[in-house]
Amino acid sequence: MYCMSQDGVLPQWFGLLDKKGNPYNSVMFLIIISLFVPFVGRAAIGWIVDVNTIGALIAYAYTSAAAHKLAKEDKNLKVRITGIVGMVISVLFFIYFMVPNIWTVSNLSAESYLILIVWSIVGFMFFRMVFSHDKQDRFGKTTTVWIALLFLIFFTSMLWFRQTVDNVTKQIINDLNSSQQAELSEHGIILSEEEAAESSAYLNRKMIEFNQDMILSGLMQMAVIVAALIIMFSIYKFITEREKNQITKRVQAEERYRAKSTFLSNMSHDIRTPMNAIIGYTNLAKKESDITKIREYLKKIETSNHHLLALINDVLDMSWIESGKMELVEKRTDLIELMDNVRDLFSTQMISKSLYYGVNTDSIDDRFVMCDDTQLNRVILNLISNAYKFTQDGGRITVTLKQTGSDDKKGFYELRVKDTGMGMTQEFAETVFDAYSREKSAASIQGTGLGMAITKSIVDMMGGTIKVISAKGEGTEFIINFVFVLSEDVPKEQGSDENNIESVDFTGTRLLLVEDNEINRQIAELILSGAGFELDTVENGKEAYEMVAASQPGYYKAVLMDVQMPVMNGYDSTKAIRKLENKELAEIPIIAMTANAFVEDVQEALDAGMNAHIAKPIDVPTMMKVLADIIIKKM
Figure 1: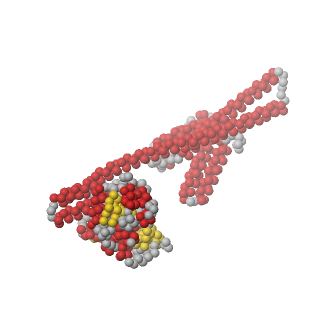
Figure 2: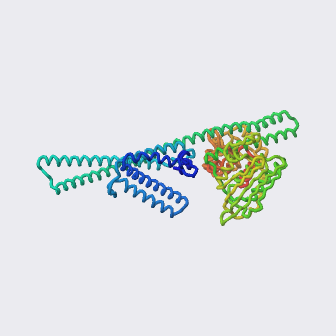
Figure 3: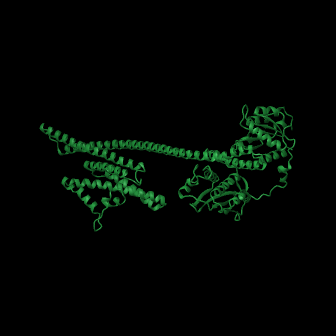
């Protein structure tokens, strides 16, 4: 009782010690509740001993089971074996004492069974009290305990009922036998000792048969009860888990709602900022006559456009990742070249804030690997962009990619992006990879709160790990570990310069432009006409099919095909063109020019029979490079 008090199972009162260090209260409590026993007769002591014996067996079985479980976790075979042996011994002795007429010479008394029932119920009530006061959530984690307690109560009740019936039956049979012998004696019939012995033996055999039938029926009853208990608690457990899951889902839904509400509020601000700049500078450009200022305004509009597009891409990409549709496209990648491009991309920006900017790849031995270079590049750019946004003028940003090891087929790499910026609180650092998460102190800095969530998702998809080390006012460091399949160093093909768009003269090259949106069509016409192309335009896929079918082979060098259009979409139009009887017309180059810009969209365009894919908004150099490649191949 003292130990249970120390563990918080019993009230602290039971664990109080006197001046000599003895658990005085526990001792006195046991003395007081034991005082009544001598007043109910000497037989009561035997009842108490019986109950204590059963209690000791249960405690020993529980201790053995606990030892077995802990030894299993520690992989200690010796203790596991002794735990199993202890449980088996406890069960055998439990049956020995509890089940009448199996091994025992005499049965437990009905009073012992009754005390055991009361003791079990009191134990159940005590467990209920302990469970309700369990602030540390240590108890009630398994239904096995509940089933064992209920089984003990039901099993003992059955045995008590059986023993009571057995005692009453014996008394009735003895009374009937005595009455029968007295009646025979009154009629002058006196049984001999041998006849009386035979009569008693016959009655004993019938009592034994009766007891065996009672035990068999009781065991069958207990089997049914145990089965019902297991089913009942399995249903209870299922209902509890379902309710828990529903509560969890409701809490998660509420958290997502709050996060998205905050995100929409932030997005409203972030989108309006570049939109305000675009509208403002557009109005200024319309009123301005100085060509130098107009170009300055257009440059600022272009910068705002890029920022707005980055915001939209973040939102779309996060939605794509969450839906599980994003896929990696691995190809041979030069890590050092990729990092050199990263260095060049940010150099000008870093100079504008007087930031020290270093990119280090000195410790890379195996530079060629198989990976999705686009997504890897995006991870690095996200981290550097973050560092740039949150680092004050005059600070430092260092990017280090080093090889930490390799085997025959794989290389192990570590990427570190460290800055001396404003840093993060420990609380926010724990949620920095959650979608829509933004620290309040950085509310003035534009962003969606999706960059780190996208970064984490891509790193996870690539099988890497990412962690952050940060302190408020001391800067932040992101550490990513990757494992890439190594690739051989293949020399670059010679003569690739001939594919340079500057060496291609587009003058007089006729294209078919398929675009249903008037503004998009006009923009494409201006860009392509300015590059020397001649254009025919249609507004849907059906018209595109008819124009190609009616043309002469070679008249159109290529078709720029939108995807989402009325009457017939771009995919169906392409499939129809590929089925034309004229083989030359059927093989005309078709380039998807669409806002559907995910990897799956590119693949769907190729599957439909298109030769290439250009994403909207149109990146002019990319479009010219694709057209140059297509036209050169066709020539």
